[in-house]
View 1 (cartoon, one colour):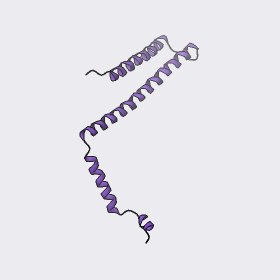
View 2 (cartoon, rainbow, N blue to C red):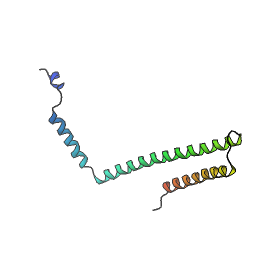
View 3 (tube, rainbow, N blue to C red):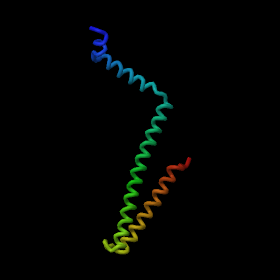
View 4 (cartoon, rainbow, N blue to C red):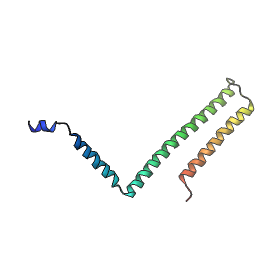
Length: 110
């Protein structure tokens, strides 16, 4: 066999297991500071995803409320005044809740 043929041989099962064991040992030797940093990064990623999801829901809600108001205004849809007032009030309440939630998140009390 030539040197090239030896290099193309598949890895033995034992060598792959040794690499996996070494990788596991390497993960265990992380410092507490590295683990805390990793936890903070994961937490920020999760918070960002949840914030985008909630913002998307709010935007969808606000757009649907505006569409309903325009459709009623042009006479293409009929809603009573009580329903229109509650729809607009609910949209304003959601906007205020989003504002308070974002403000509380950006400026937490210590």
